[in-house]
Image (cartoon, rainbow, N blue to C red; front, side):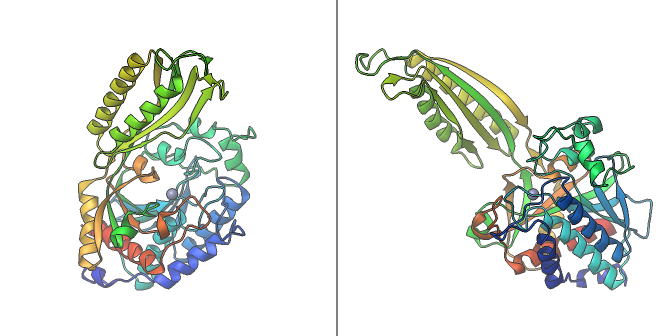
Length: 413
Ligand SMILES: [Zn+2]
């Protein structure tokens, strides 16, 4: 087969689906979900199955020092940088069958399709399994793709501890996936990650393919309000220093500030003291989570929030302190990779739309060292990180077909 036949290659949606269901047996929960926590024996079993499947189609397996797995299919030109895809096999404790596993097994299906057709790409093709994406056992999330992307160093990743005091490095050795390869430091010709959307937009808009243009940036805040505790009955309404009122007004302001195109604002934790129904709250702790795909807009949200908090504090005789505890910059994906995904969807005649990733993904860190794009497919009711997470077989297949075409375009030009 030559390059002209690339457009005729078809992935096998039934085979992909049955591989997803087989992988989901490893750590299967009673409610139909999956619990396959990073670097546990179940994670090892999932990895072993993936490695077995890849070797069966002639791939060479390499494992790096943080346990990332790379299954490589040679290209005609071994000197060209590989075109890579992949995602993660670890799950949340009450996770689903598709988050992460879809991106890995869609990559496997690409390998199988090329293998069956005897098709030789110009550049090598690789499928990656990134260690500990979820971050529920070892924080932070996406730590191993972060090392690959140059954001963290190897020792930092290996020294992360789980709640029982076990280090990432110890757990990695225990499951036999502490590899010899250096992490990253090599040129990648392009990286594509297929993933379920984990949100409701594609389903609502009735589109099969999300062309992911960027991933949101985040700012996380911890905010403390201080007023004065006093008697609920004897303290007149004017002159009160009600810390909880300050928090309440800021929650409403945050919602207003977040209500801009592509903006998100969430207050998830509020803790008032002293938790007495007849004492005016004197102290409040609250969290705030701001997201936006455009860094300038995210900065404007920050400025607007700080101004609002200062005004609320002054008007209500309160003190407020705002600490930003995390900043994750927005990740715009590579224009050419994004176009490859869109072109593939157009050629296949699939309904598609541009979309911004609301969640973090391994692709966000890989994007720091390689041209990167993502493909989203709908998931039922937009639900993810839940055992009832579900997706449509036809959508799963469509996303994989787009992945194949996008990778081929990049691997052959
Ligand atoms: Zn995921």
